[in-house]
Length: 491
Image 1 (tube, rainbow, N blue to C red):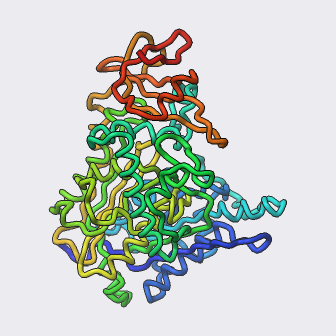
Image 2: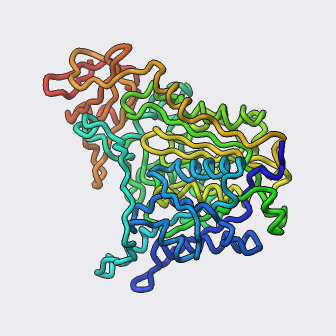
Image 3: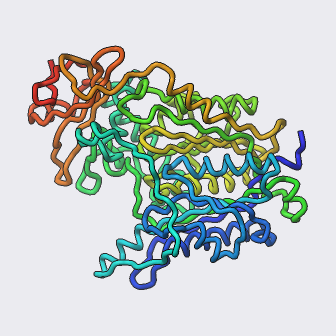
């Protein structure tokens, strides 16, 4: 093993602007460049002239046309420029790509940086204005991925707040909990996330919340979709940016970067599941997540019991549980499952949260005595997954990266049900949620119904009696009949 070729993170920077007011608003370009400058300062030596790859998660709150070029021009970078696809997994995926290129000698230094300023846009609107931020002359192609099947859209299953809760019934049944016990467990688990956010100076919300404050509906914490209240969902209206600088151990020595700034990248893994959530093999585990966990841990020759720190992606609580399942973490594991605080509390800057999580992991590991940390990222509706293993000590083997194309193909070729667009007859409920209106009124039941071993469908019920009934009790596994109007009726 050539230790000089091992990838290391040598600088991180984070920016959080909680109180921007019109007209003194920084835009995402400003915040991204400030975060990048902080990362360079953190490295302790001039580095921008050595950066030969710039990686930018898509800035969703403002269309810059070509954000990587604008950032490169502002920072004076002359390098390859990459804009990632949409997805909360992509910052980790971009770092995995960069680490692999560094280890292979294809690049010398990479900068991953992103930012969002949704709070600033809201501040402008409150003052009666709309922001008019920078735009480039050239325009990069937009994302071509369509996350939702037309049938899913027809059933009004578009928003994450309606889709992620559908996984909860299978998760609680697999855990052996009643609905009431499960809600209490969700509260305890996410209360620990608020504790970690309270220790993070970059977190948007730094209040410690009790389990009851998180899961009990109130006017300040209304129900969104059972079992999730508002405080269990991501909070996107933030002004935040983060940056990570990567190089090799050999280049770090050449530049004179102090070794106490180094964090080693042990392994990275990426894998996509079947594309549509209605066709997932199951809802109590995600095969693609299991692949990522197997590759970052097994590929490094360690078990999850040897990892001291985690940041499990937390756009919704089901994602946290599924990542924990993939990593083999018990429900009562006492290790913190986040170092940054999670998307509901540290802040959810659209696709860039994972960059913050990696920066927070670096800062955590620097304070440790040779410990290891895992960061996970999720994109789509539990579709795209990226994991990274980081260490305060060097690995005893080369950087490991899985063959994501082969692993994705294997997952998608494994047995899984197909979506039935013309359902009839009877089936059993595999997942359900009750979305609520802003006035706190339950509106409908959205249910995943398994028709037979090879077919699944997605249905609504608008019947007031059914809607009221589904707000409590256990309906997982219950038999239902497809009605002529393509709704469902409990049998």
